[in-house]
Length: 224
Image (cartoon, rainbow, N blue to C red):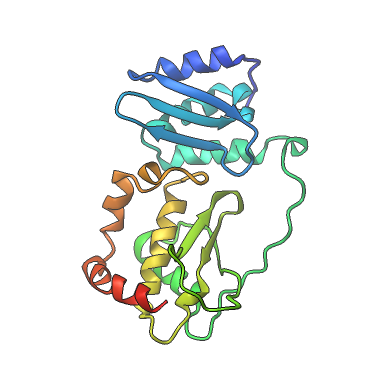
């Protein structure tokens, strides 16, 4: 792919001509959240890494499709461009993450493979691990059961879920939820209104035991 020599104005004009709503574009050097799209009622906000300013036309086209309705081939074009971007423009060598998948009660890799086969046709390639150990058990106002980090292509699962009183089905759903984030190519920490968009919630309800999960969720979380 051949790079372009373009200005922010060129880039903005290209993006805007593909949308009927006004598009606000912010260039960043954020190497974790490289693309963030926020769709509002009367506008669209795009935060994108400056590397995309001089990306090839093919990547710009894929970016437009990603902003509208991302498909697998568009995601692959963007990933390939990011992966071939000069190393000097990438972050310094990161500390290697030690993956811990086997807990006292649940094997995350085993459940991940099960979900991958059942819902993603074994096409999802993501790492998974338990989060850091909890030294002291204390009540918290907000409990994060799991989260997906695009920059590491890694799913973290809260260690509190590795407990006898937590149903395996509940852990399976949490993993499915985070795998959805990975599959939908949510690049970085976006606002909840975008992160859990209508399409995401629709796919989330495809989980076979979704109704059962809704009934048990509050009871399980209260014990954590």
